[in-house]
Length: 207
Image (cartoon, rainbow, N blue to C red; front, top):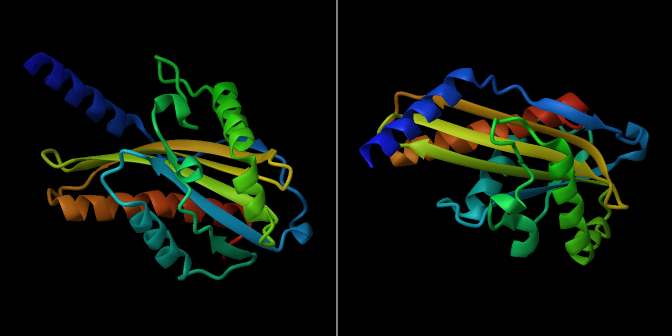
C-alpha cells in the first residue's frame, strides 16, 4: 500500500511538472462572428465532485462580470444532471490513452453521443435565442498534504444542429504552497474558470 501511494504521488508530481496548461486546439469551424449574437455556457463536472455544481457556476459568473462582452454571454441554468455531470471516465469528454495521448476521435465521439442522448434538453437551450453553446467540462483534484492542484478540461462549442464547431482541451497543475482545503479549492476553481475566460477572449466573445 505504501509503494502504491508513493507511486501515485510521484506520478502526480511528474504530471504537474510537465504540464504547460496551454490549451491544445484540435478543431475550429466557427460561423462568421456577425451571425453570432448570443452565446450560452453550460458547465459540466463529475457527478462525484466534492464541490457543488452551483459553486462552479457562481465562480464563473463572478469572473465573467469583470470583462466586456463582445457577444452576449449567458450561463445556462440547468438542474438536469444528464447534461451537467458525467458519471465515470467513460462518459468524460477528456479521453486519453494509457500513454497519456489525447484521443480526439474518441472524445468527439462521446460529445456526439452526449448531444444525441440529450437532444431535447439541448434544443430547449437553443430555443432561448442562443446561437452557439459552449460546453465547458472540467475535472480537478487537490492535494491537501502537498499543496498542489491538478485539473483537465475540454472546451467544446456546438451549433444549433448540435454539431461541433470548436474543440480544445488542456491539462494543468500547480504547486500552491497552500494547505487549507478551502483555499485550495478556491484556487482550483479560479484556475479552471480563468482557462474558460481566456478561451472566450481568444475566440472573440470577450474583451
